[in-house]
Image 1 (tube, rainbow, N blue to C red):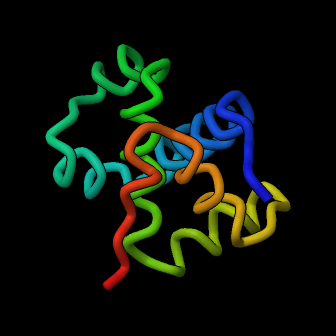
Image 2: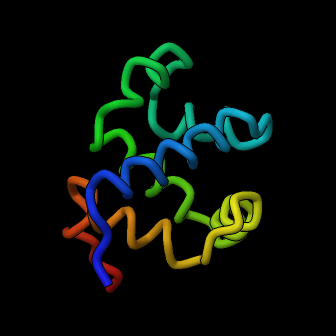
Image 3: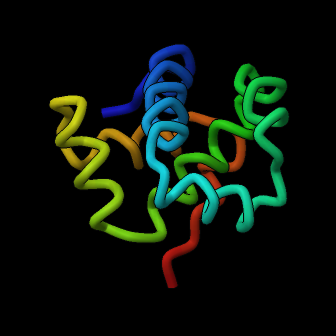
Length: 94
């Protein structure tokens, strides 16, 4: 089942807020993306940046589980949201 772009952006914003509140992961995200804390606010409305947030979370299953558990979401929703955002259609798992 596909997800609307609006719903995907909302879920990615939830993931961004969760990430900002995570003192252990936020520095890793900033280092991996090259973003600054100011960029988080400035780019929060950019669907491509939100896709990068979900890409980062997808790097570790435990991060997806922790985010989903904290929001009462099923574990497949972040990847469904990622697929609905720019660049998500280009995922290649091979």
